[in-house]
Length: 134
Image 1 (tube, rainbow, N blue to C red):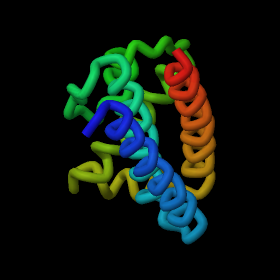
Image 2 (spheres, rainbow, N blue to C red):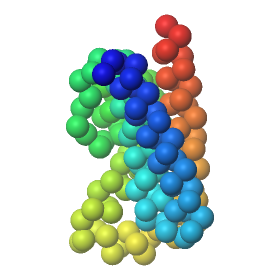
Image 3 (cartoon, helix red, strand yellow):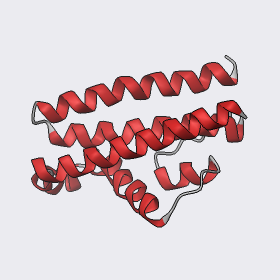
Image 4 (cartoon, rainbow, N blue to C red):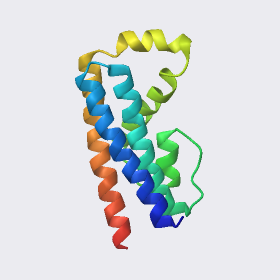
């Protein structure tokens, strides 16, 4: 598998997950919409890592860390958004946090974070497009 193939894999699976996130949100499955939203951004960051690090993709779910090693410049708001989305990876996995998270994941809360995913997704796709031109 070439670097281009690997980057394309991450982009394509992120797009599949993006559609799934929207379906989960529309059906009221807010916790899974948030979890999958995290995956969308994680996979796009890993596509960015392919260009910055070659084929050595880190096995991490920390979005701030992935942005750093992908050598993507982020402002403070973007860092906060990435950190916020990173929590969804953990909160959905562990039973002691799951209950509280299920209660917090209201329609409004989820809508706010789905919008963040959409914004970051567009920004990362732009980053990938720019890097493929260089």
